[in-house]
Length: 431
Image (cartoon, rainbow, N blue to C red):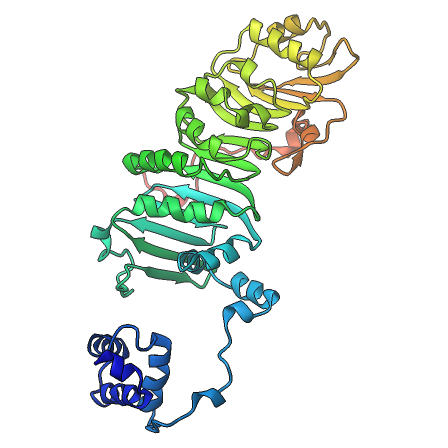
């Protein structure tokens, strides 16, 4: 029967008209058509054309479609138009587009993407934020009906959108049985694009430790075949062992700065300091108590750190580095308590200034050393490298504290705590 019907276009169109007259939805009508006539008789696009033509009252079965202009195809569009369309799409739509077909994925992954920051955090389940504006929250299926925004309807796909008009931020909620794997794959689709320009990748520890461990383990495996590029990696509340798993994701030669923020756990530093990403980075900011030996930080061009232990032998290692390093420019080291005499003895400096001195290396290199209350600043003379958008030369010496102004007796207003008595004492009666 299907062969006979397939040879007669008028009969096929009559079957579509019959479905329209039954007032069924197009999807149900097409499924019924394929079941009764055949799956290979007519494509969905052709069925869509005739269905809506009949639906709008045009019941002419002899209509000749060859006179219609050809429908525009994405493959026939100019490249600049395609780029303009893609640049106007939100990040979630780009991720969906890359999953439609390999061709779409290739087109999207060849476009230029610029991100100031991509942040991964685990406060609830898993959230990935792009440019501090578009946050995608990944949740398991059992949370599909839960929404902190009760006024918002839930889509059948488990996706909810919250838009804030004040700061132009959007939140997308995506649910999946294996939401961690989905998050890793989505991030990989973005990061493996060789045209992505990423300034900072931020990884924030949260309350969901189990989700975080699974994400790190899967990301470590997923990104082995496609390393990404970023200028800065910043970690919040993570152990050094966790950071050691994340750093190999990125190209060692393009990673410039490593930042540890807000009390990261210091266990497992041995694996971290052996990575090429650590050895080739230029800047390091670990401004919290760190138990990493100081010699593992002396290769940086610029570093800030708070060492738990700082002995005279550490000061000697620091001097040895200054004598031989060709790229060192600036260091900011928190030492508690500060021992200026120990530092001067290690640097073989004798002067009357208690807080400042200049160290001359054997090759006539000049380094300005300033000892504040708890911080040691060392700056190579003439060094202008910018650290956190400030010139390093502005760090080595805090601004001077202005001298208190001279005060005279006339500047004070004395206060007499005794209660004042009324001038008219006649109102007072004896007890």
